[in-house]
Length: 408
Image (cartoon, rainbow, N blue to C red):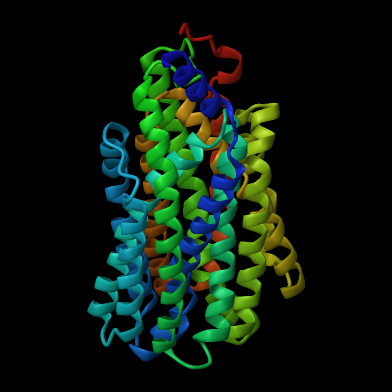
């Protein structure tokens, strides 16, 4: 009986469960689509409540801080005590936050509402990343890319749906997105059942399912490498903040587009981000994650440097190229980090997702203040240099060549 249990546990560990991967990816799609609705309606909120760009930055900062600060703690806790049904609870927070945004009557109410959405995100990402990891069957890069594809696709679709549903009719119509949150709660409850069954099998035989990646790097080298990865996350998401929060304002200001026209360009950029995400993980599995990180961050620099000086046509083309290239980094960075620190998927996912959100929020606040003091075009000229930080990738060890097998 015990032998059969061991065999079954090992088979689960080695099997890529695509049904779960695509399901958790779809819920990631729903989660990030709902989160993207609020930035998409910034022009409406800005006009209705007479906000400055600094105020817009503070809204993003409030959301991103609640979404970022809690994530490492959630991940650390669930590494020790997994909570499968916390996934559905996360979506409940998002549901309440969206409803609150729809009826918010003041700037303070909006801040409180987006903080609830941020709490939902802080619970969702570490645990859903663990589900993707458990269902990967060892193909961690592929699994993380499928998972990230859903999130980035949701971020792309959110602004487009907001342009159709909210922009023409007003703030209250955000309430319609609550239907998607309810759908997410139902689906995540089903994922939680699979997650719990997997944990039960693992508990029956703790030696059968182990992390496969072990390296010979010293603790000091691991910490140094993690710091480099966090700096790279800073450069990527600080630049992404300029696009997600201010790209529509940039297009409206420089090319005199309407809000809805600018949302189409934002959708094209976010769609490219979603598409690029799909390639980063599998290419990292095949060629090495360090090289994908290098190409993704430093390789996008020539295009970001050209963007502020391009015509409307070339702005659209360059933004798509930037989205495709820069988006391939995160899956590779996250899997690289989990291989540096085996067995701490929740903590690492929470730390890196948290930093990504935190940098996005901090970047949005700082760039909003900079836009108020200078111009929105100047913001894009400054941010164009951020991908050059990708040169630090050269300091990362080639971990794929530094692995050693684990003795069972």
